[in-house]
Image (cartoon, rainbow, N blue to C red; front, side):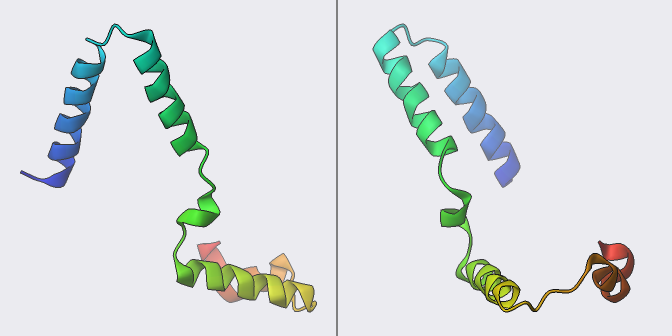
Length: 80
């Protein structure tokens, strides 16, 4: 079974199970868990390579090594 189908099946199982819960306290705990997961800082979820690239860009910007948008258009053309 492909991964996408497994994901969809799991979602349906969870929806069906959740629809049977009558305990408000339990539902609130689930809701709190979802809220905490959604509030995670994206910066903690990026790879080391992405983090290093961002840090390199900040160092370059702090050093005044910036190019105007027109220069980026010249270099990268229609890709941006």
